[in-house]
Length: 191
Image (cartoon, rainbow, N blue to C red; front, side):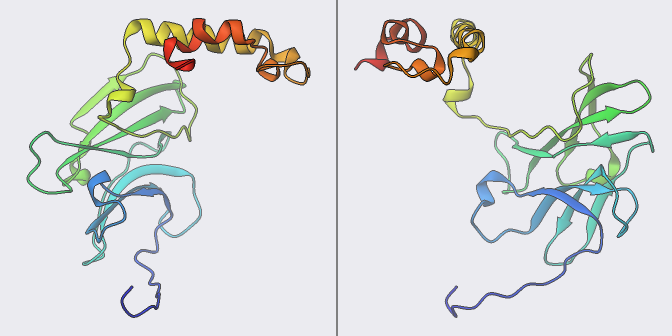
């Protein structure tokens, strides 16, 4: 940005989807991009495999599942005590078109082509294209009680969905009143 100019360059002819970098490299100069890729090279195809593209060498390290299996957006999870920014794992959901079931796949981020190091059956089909992210942040590690509280709030909001356009007072658009707030949002709502 010192020069005030921007340039663009084609890094790959492959169909690439959901490109991401390691979180520690976000907004920084980085060496690798992690992505889902189509199974037909440069021909338009749905996301099927996963890959790591080195932006310096333009070498793609890719893994492709069976023709009836489709991987979604890869999520980067850094290793504890990582030796560099790209030392971690790639997590992706894979939908099996024959069984209509999904698996969670885990790859070593620096050797994607060797295939998943773990394949965990989810026990149900998760729609292809579901987006997500990995975080170690405290706000994502809710207690059972917090999950129950949030589920109760979501149920209440859904059950009062016919009131969303009702105009009264408070939070009536959501079917909630001030007397509900402390119950659902806790003491912090009023402080």
